[in-house]
Image 1 (cartoon, rainbow, N blue to C red):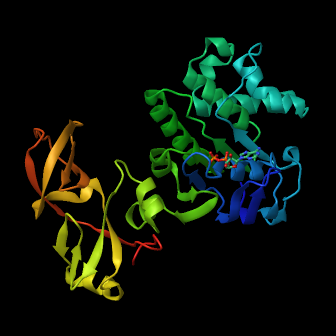
Image 2: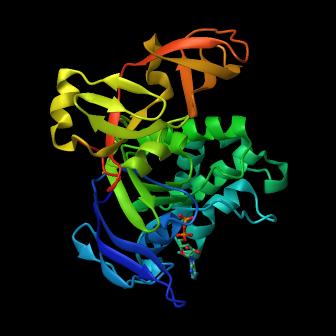
Image 3: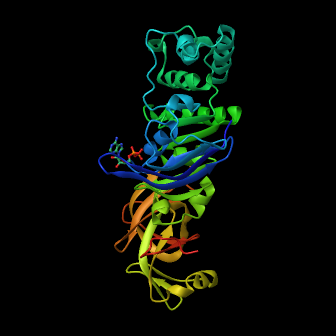
Length: 352
Ligand code: ADP
C-alpha cells in the first residue's frame, strides 16, 4: 500500500526527444490511475520512469514520503505487468508465480502460501501444475498478474496489459483487473490508448497528448466536462461532433447549422460576441427535434441503440438514438441538441 507523488517529471531522451513535460500527479493509497492518450503521447515513458526503467530527466518521484527518483528498479518495491507477458515456458504456473520469491530466497512455506493465495484470487488454483503452453491467452495474462501479486508490491504498474488479447477476452480480463483492484485495494498505474478501458477502470484518468497532461479527473469529469477539444474528442465513443461557428447577437451561427442560445448559454458566451467558437455535441446528445434536418448517409443498428450518420449541408454528424431505427440513405431526420459543449476556437479550451 502506498501513496505516490510524481512531481514536475520531465523526460528528454538521448536523441533530444522530449517525451514528457512537467508531469504532476498525487496518487492516493489504493487508487487506480489510468494514463490514456494516443500512441506516442508519453504514457509508457511516464510509467517506465516510475518503474525505474527510464532515468528521470528532471523532477521527483516520491513513495510514502521517500524520494526514490534515482533508486534502482529492484529496490523500488514496484511490480510491472507488461503487454508481452513472457512466462518461463519450462516452468509450471506455480513455479512461474513463485519465481521472484525464490530469487529473493523467501521461506518455502511463505512462498507456498503467497502463490496459493494469488492463485485463489485469480482463479488459477486448478492450473498450478500446467505449463504455459497448456494455458489460454487470458490465463497467461492472469499468471503474469499472479507473478506481480505474490510480491505484494507497494505499487502495481500495467503497460497495455490487454492489447494482445482478442476483443471478448479483453473485456473479460478488464473486468478481472477491476475486481482484482477492488480486492487488493492496491495502488495501481495503468497505461492504455483505449478510452473504454480508461472510463471503465479508472478512479481517476490522466489524459495526455504530445507529452503534456491535458486533464486529470474522474471518468465522469472527463466525459462530462472535458478541459479542451483534445480531451473532448478523445474521451467518448463514437467521438463528439464538432461544429465551427461564431457567436452573433444571441445565436450560434455556422455555415450549415445555426440556433438561438438559451439564457444560460448567452451568459456563458457573453464575452464571445462576434468571436469564433466550436460547438461540441456528443452523438448521445443529439435527439429528434427541429433545430435542423440531417440527411442520413448510414444507419448502423447496435441493438439497443442506432448510430445514424449523416450531414446537415456540408456538416457531418453522428447521432446515437436509444432505439432501433431503420433510416434509408437520403432520409431526412429533424434533430436537436440536448447538451452542448462550447470551446474557444483559438485556445481550444472549454468555455465554462
Ligand atoms: P506512448 O506510450 O504514449 O505510446 P511513449 O512514451 O512510448 O508513448 O513515447 C513518447 C515519445 O517518446 C514518442 O515520441 C517516442 O517516439 C519517444 N520515445 C520513446 N522511447 C524512446 C527512446 N528510447 N528513445 C527516443 N525516443 C523515445
